[in-house]
Image 1: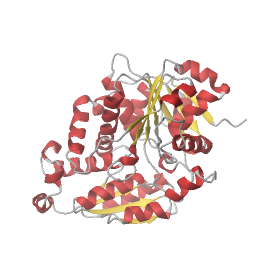
Image 2: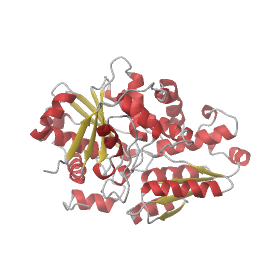
Image 3: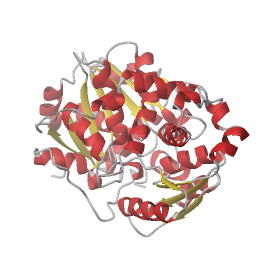
Length: 398
């Protein structure tokens, strides 16, 4: 029988954890202070699903709703904007704390810095965030999208002033494409949320940018969560979230669970191999979870994840659809969360695990019971409204 959720407990050898300080409390505070300087900044809601928690047999279930982030319907802008600011600060010999939004967007700074071209590959959310930030800073932006990306998402990026095309190759090949294009451009800069040998600093800034979401959620949750579920594509978000909570609760960290789309579950494959080495996925990797459709891990976050994650899950599309529908139509008294295909993956996985007896062993191993207090992140809203309606309203598969 094909399992909707494949799972493996983490038995990989630990490393010296040299990347964990990237997500230190000091770095998190610096990133959040930067985002708080934006006129668009508001803390996004934390949906406390009390009735759902009771239904699932859990103590508490909270979902951070990133559909309200900066009017962009997704969390990704946090990483892209912070990385661009860190890059500009470095070029000018300044600390990013000297460049709040009003300074960063000023004519004086533009005259001082000049114009660069920021390149990125994306399924939609990251590219839109990079384009949005570049647009407000008077910079050029070039975005490449992988095969299967929707025209709606491409147009959303184009509206932010970026050059944006849908290519005939997968996400990882698009990353290689923009790296080559940026290298050929006079002031080309790759702002990519994955790291490889020789390209590690900018992805670490992106991970730090994501920590604003985690820091807000931790304050809103008001206590130490016993469990944190987070979805992963290349693993930058997961590394940022896991790194944040591993630093915040060093003596007693939450149980951390990473959720991937099964066709692109490179982290899960690495955990199955259990030797600590990176594994990859290739080809088109068909899934509705476009934001998780990445087959090559971020090497920086992989180091954090293999030291601090308890279990890796690989889920099929039915799990994401289930999460979208349950969050969109909650039990009476609970708040609604409009969550997209990638955003709902973790909640869908949790619901599947709790309601299907074939996962009793996993529940036992992770301590998912009436005492569990779970925090998770809906990282996007209906970033493709027609697809969201087709799945949630019409019951279609995509």
